[in-house]
Length: 324
Image (tube, rainbow, N blue to C red; front, side, top):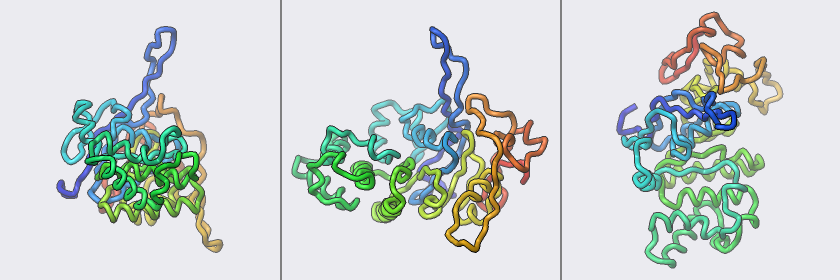
């Protein structure tokens, strides 16, 4: 990957949440939500991050934007380290990095009209000359996401979940960003509406030359929208590769188990289901060695002692497993 192609580079990112107990709220441990992960995002691509609930994928997205302050590591956006920026410098950079939240019901202020919700980032960043210019921009943004300009004077409770998510997308587009982090943007929507929103995101990506980090637990959705996929387990990256390669040739036992659970609409095709035994260990006390070894059907002695490194097993296909 050429340096000129890289929009975002994450190096050794960590996010630990302190565990406090007692009257004096003494720190007795840490929940290692994201534990030393590194990856790159190319301009114009959709990089998906997948995994079970609690694997750290949403925390990764929040840490990249510093909505959650990273415990350690480097996040370089266009060569500039976001982690070291002051609040004033970060505010200026945030115009290029936006987020679409998971819940369209909680992410919109119920006391604000849609015009003000979409117009707020325009006002904060002084992107309009006057009120008339502001209204023109808002109407254009609403049209871009498939909503009419009459929506400006209505409140969020008057819209369906899919329409609310479109409002959230319009708000993210208001500052003309280069990178959008979509944190499970369709998981709260009906299946038919999910397809509409996914198609909208793809159309907007082509229209505005956007780069996406798409966070999801739904491998069917990820297969449709992504270019490359990162698989996370218990705060660690276990596999990274192109979308077609992952679905055709998953290497890590955890990825194989995830894909075996994806339903196939062909009744004559039967996929061997891999049932993982046991529960996901606590991120406050992860197991030694490979974090997946407590549930892995291919576990070896070395897995219990030595943590595997993320290594390239074939062309642009990386996995962290002692089996390869």
